[in-house]
Length: 214
Ligand SMILES: [Zn+2]
Image (tube, rainbow, N blue to C red; front, side, top):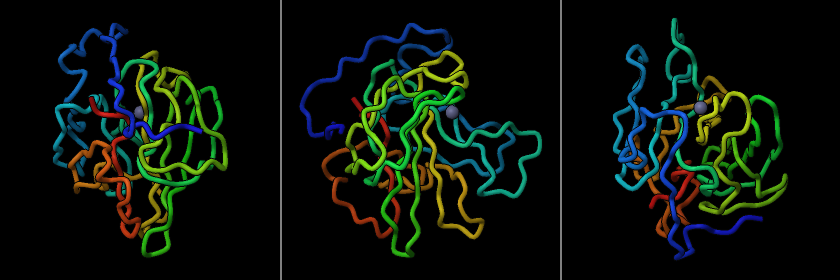
């Protein structure tokens, strides 16, 4: 089992990133959110906290739009941070899968409590350095489930968390959705985990950031 990371007063020492992508300036390790690809038809205006680890790639999927002609799909958001950074549950739930595969490396999937309409959503945490939970574990929002890493060939050698939301609350049925629609503070308002979010009702599905903010 993991532990509830935000409850700890320990300062997280973030090592300066010295990886393969020299284009990501050190001052952009926090507080930077990449733009949506220009041709993506459903971009969301983002409010990125200055203390949140940066987002290097946005969602481009088909939930909000019927076709994405000419766009290379990406069913989640990528959060950049050093290998070993804690990865925390974006909402409470039960670990449905915890396994390794060649493309996505170490991955964990959480099934979240049903909302008022009885529909459960799931979140996936991909390319983990380490998995710290097993199938059947019950996690609170903010509890650590693994460490950010660079496993799986789709990580392209770039340390990041691929964070994906599989949302069931639409007429299209189960589909990957843009996580920016569901932050606890509102659409586009990326919400760092903190004690004020621990007990929010699952009546409407809400997310907090899947890595701790500094
Ligand atoms: Zn990704």
